[in-house]
Image (tube, rainbow, N blue to C red; front, side, top):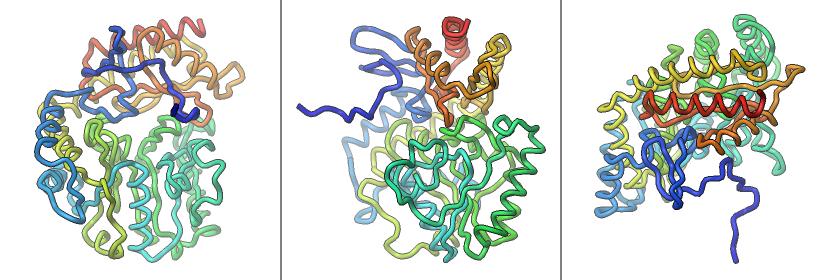
Length: 417
C-alpha cells in the first residue's frame, strides 16, 4: 500500500471535504474558519462562484494547450489583462506553475540579460524549494539543508529587521544599507552582480515588512551599479497587503517582478514580468515548460481579476486588515508572550518570545494548534517557528475577522494565560 511521505506533516488536523469562502468543512459536518488560504493562495476564497464557473467552462473547451506548441485564448487574454495591473514598464511576461519556478526564471533571465553571475539575496527571504530557489532562501535551514552543494554565486545581505537586531528602524536601515555597500566592495563586485532579489514583506521569514528608505536604497544602488532589482511578489501580490502589489507601499519599482499564489485562486500559475528590453535578452530556448500557463489556470486567473475588481478586494484587504491588526494588538497588549504584531493588510504575524526574550516556537505552535482545536486554522513561520500568521482570503468580512479574533484570544489565554 502506498502512503504519503512522512515528511509531509499537516499543520492542522483537517481533512477537508469542501470549502466555501473563508470556511472549510469535513465530511462529518465539522466547520473551520480558514485563515491560511492555502498559504495565501485562495485569494477570492474557496470556490468563488465566478472562478468555479470560469474553470468549469474552460474544462469543457480546452484543458491543456502547451504554450510553446500552440497558443490559446485564455493565455492571450490574461496577458492583456495583466497589463492593466502591472507597472506600465513591466510589459513582457513569462508564465510557469509555482513560485519556485518563477524564482528560477527570474534568476536565469537576470544572468542572461546582464551576462553576470552573482545574485544578492536578503536574510530571511523565501523564494522556493527547487535548487536555485532554495539557494536564494534563508528563511530557515530546513529549506536548504541536506542537499548541498547549492547553486553558486549567491551572496546574502542583511534585511532591515529591527525587531531581530533590537535597534530602531532608522539604525537598522542604516546598517543594512551599509552592509550592502560593503558586500559590493568586498564580496561581489557590481561587475559580477546580476541582480538583487527581495520580498517586500518577508513571508516564511516571519512577516516582517521592509521599509521605504531601504527598498528605495536598493533601487538607487541597482541603478548606480547596473544591477537588476527583482521583487518577489509571490505572497504579497494580488491585494494581499492592502495594495495591489506589496511594492506599492514603498514607492519602488522592479526590473523583474515575480508573481504566483493568489494569481489564480488556487490553480497552479505563476510568472515573471520584465521590461521588453530585458526579456528580449533571454537566450532562445531558456523559457518554457509542459504545464506553464495551463488554459484552465489562465481562465481562473481572469476570473480572479474580475472578482478582485468587482468586489473591491484590495480595499477590503486594507480595511479588514486594519480591523484584524487592531484586534491582534489588543491581545498582544495583554500577553507578555507576544512580543510583536507586524505585517500589512491581510498578512499579519504575531511573534512569540519567552521570558528571556528569545524566539519561542514551542509556544507559537501550541497556540496555533489550540486555535485549530477551537475552529481557527492558522500557520506558523519565522526561523524558529515563532510567528503565528493570519492570511485569510481577501473576501473576508468583519464578522469572520471578529470570530477569528475571539478564537485567537481564547487560544492564547488557554496556552499562556
